[in-house]
Amino acid sequence: MSRRLLKAAEAIREVVSMAILTELRDPRVKSVTVVSVDMAPDMKSAKVNVSIMGDEKQQALTLSGLQNAAGFLQRKIADRIETRYTPRLTFVIDKGVKNSLEVLRILKEVLPKEEASELEFNEKTAEE
Image (tube, rainbow, N blue to C red):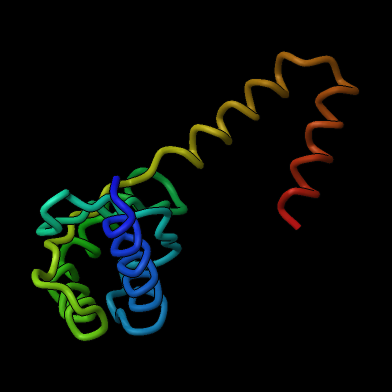
């Protein structure tokens, strides 16, 4: 990916993150973290990868709330970033965090007790 696309993706990630956090009033949209943004080479569309806390039902509800707010978020991008096109946003749940938690859970089951407790200690210190 070109440097220009990476800079645009990062700028969009920041604008979308702040707008979701401070300006979006949809009660369905909560506990959302914008993980990354993947820009199309023509910069006409962007895939926003989000991490959503909660069960599958909550995630689906939040995702539909985000998709409904896409026009609002696109206007925020147009206001703050100078580009020829305002990218059309699509939201996708990022499975990375969920997958890493699942791997950690499996490791705790398989590893001997002392190694599992050391794994927990490392996990807690990483969170701080």
